[in-house]
Image (cartoon, helix red, strand yellow):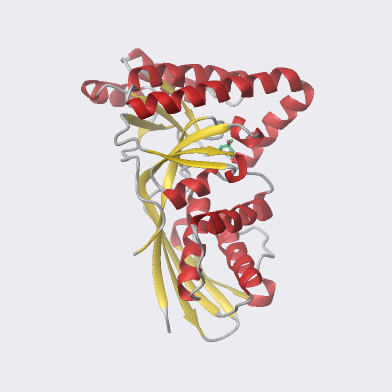
Length: 323
Ligand code: MEV
C-alpha cells in the first residue's frame, strides 16, 4: 500500500527560553540532525510503531484506543496523539505502519518529540491528500503537544516546520523566519537529561510566589531577544554573544541553571567565546556558545575538559520535508 518518508530537523534555542511560555519572543535555530519517519497505509484497524531509538519494537494499538497511553516513551505518545488528532480533524481513518529513525539522541533536548509530531502530520497530510499549510500544521501539532504534556510554547514545532532560524512568539502569534546565513555555534552536552515540563513548572511556582519580579525578568529577556534579532540579522555575532551572557544570568535568576551547565559555560567563556548560555529548559541538556572560528578548537576542548560532550551540528537546517 501507499507509503511515504518524511524528515524534520532538531532545534536549539538561541534566546528567550521560559519567557516564551509567557507571551514573550524567542529565537530558535534548526540543526542538520533529523528525525526520519516512514508512514505506510495498511489494512486493518491498528497502528504499528517501531521506534528503535527509544526502545520501541512492534508496538501495536487499536485505532479506537489511540491516545490512551501509559508508560510509553514520550516520542511514541506524541506519535499516537498526532494520528488521533489528524483522524479526528479530517474525519479519515486507516491502519498504519510507522518506523522512526533519529540522527540524534532524544537525551540532548534537540526536540525529538516535536520533530516526530511535525513529521507525522506532514506525512499523513500527503498520504491522505489533505492540504495543510504551515500555520495549519503548526496549530494541530501544538494542540497535540498540549494534549500530551500540558505545556509548551510551540517554538520547537515552528522550528521543525519552517526550518532555518526563527523569531517566534508564544503559540505561533508571530513566526518570523530570520535571514541569517551562518551561526558560529558550539554545542556542549552536559550528559544530563532534563525534563521540560518539570522545569516549566519550577519557573511557574517561582512566578506564583514572585509575580512582579519574575515578570520583570521575562521583560528583560524579551528586550534582549528583540535586540539579538537585530544583531543576528546584521551578522554581529560578538555583540550577540554579549546578549547570550546576559540571557544566561537571567536564566540563572529563574533557577534553571545547574552546576554542570555553568561549568561548560564558564569553560567556553574563559577560552574566548563571545558568549555562552544554556539552551532549552535548563536543568541539564545542552549549552551553546558563539565563537570566533579561530577559537573553535580551544573552546571545544575546554568544554570537554569541563566534563561536557561536544555535539557537532550545522545550524539553519531545512524544515520538514518529504524525502
Ligand atoms: C524548552 O526547550 C523551552 C521552554 O521555553 C519551554 C517552551 O517554550 O515550550 C522552557
